[in-house]
Amino acid sequence: MRLRVADAVSVLDAMGVRRAHFVGTSYGGRLCFGIGERAPDRVLSLVIGGRQPYQMDPDTALGRLITESLAASRAGGTMEPFVDALAKWAGAPLPADKRALWLDNDPAAIEAASAAMLAESDIAVNLRSWQFRCLLFVGAADVDFFDGAQRAAREIPNAEFVPLAGLDHIGAHLDQDPVLAAVLRTLDADAQGDSDAQADVDV
Image (cartoon, rainbow, N blue to C red; front, side, top):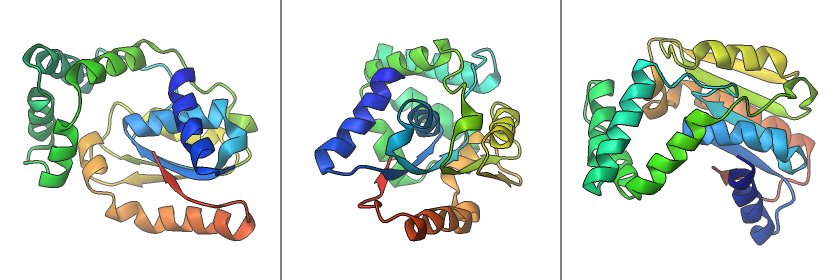
C-alpha cells in the first residue's frame, strides 16, 4: 500500500497539485483508504465505493471468484477469464467500454496486485483522526464489504454512508447513478471551502 499511495502522490506532484479529491471504487476504493491514511495532507475529500479498510477474508464467494479467475487469466495470458467471471457474477454482459478497459491489463500484474491486497492487514487504523470529508457507498447486497464500509463510516468523523438498495459488489460498481448526487455534494462542499482545489484526480 505504501508504494501504491506513493504512485498516486507522484501524479499530484507531476501535475503541481497540492491537494485533490480522490474517487475510487472497488480496488480503487481500497487505495483511497490508503491515501487517506498515509497521505492525508494531499486529500481534499475521498469518495469510496464498494470497499472497506480492514483485513479482507479471501475465502468468500467473491474472493474465490477473483482469485480463481485471475489465476486462469495469468495462465492464459489474457484478462478474458476474469472479465467473463465478473459478467457471470453480474448476471449480464458487461458494458462494452468497461469490458475493454478491464481487458486492457496485464493479467500477471493484476493477479499480483490482487494477491498483495488479500494478504494485507488493516490499511487504515487511524480513521477517527481523519479531518477531510468522506463519502462511502456500497451495494446493500454486497456481503463482502457492506458491514466493513458501514463501520468505517461510523469511525470517520466527517463521513456520509450511502447504501445502494438491491445492488451487490459488481452491480454497485457498474451502476453509480444512484449515488451521483451525493458524490457531487461531497465535491462541491469541499470546492467551496478550500481554494487549494487546483484539479480533481480520479483514481
